[in-house]
Image (cartoon, rainbow, N blue to C red; front, side, top):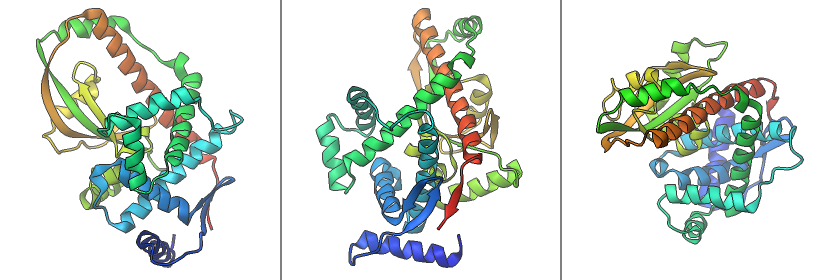
Length: 309
């Protein structure tokens, strides 16, 4: 994108935000047969801010870039999904369950409260629902394609449970940026780009701009992870961090990962072996499926035509 086009787009964005004048809705990009317009970017920017309290003070230029990148990734998934399903639609009962997870994570007790919050910030509930449907169907696609490739070594997990039998264990509040390694950039060069964005605009902003993980929609937020669940390679890196610090790139299947330690606390260790084993199996399964998702997304992205108009 030329500097002139960036200036035009940002100017349009400022006009839209101020609502001071009418505007012409323009097509900015085409992702295969899916288009991205100025209105799409505006709606995405509102959605990103309302779903991420840490981005309330982000400047408009960075928000514009983040919004474009977010929509592109979503369109790529949508294009691929439509090769496997007739329409992007999820049963209402499943939508309700997913929405409950979303609004409770944001601190709301009821769906009606969350809808009022969206309305107050000019975000259409149906706009969010469409996003949830795309993400849900993408996860179903990954599950169908790769679940039989997930490998769980129960003996190793049981051994780990018996070894890590301390009464008190650590729990880490983590954020991540999962990125592909470009053909034209070395790992160090790609990391420098991301590191500069983190220092300029913060970790959440960099996650929106660079991360290909589903967690990018929440600024890279993973949530609390107990030390007995995280794999040893990642645990060793996290233990080196002070709160607020982040790792150098860690090579994972499908790319590389940067982990940030947001907080840490001590918790009581569960002593029920079967319960803990089930938790660890679930965590390891999700971890592997997320890695397969990143690998598949990178593969799909390489075969998608993205044109600037």
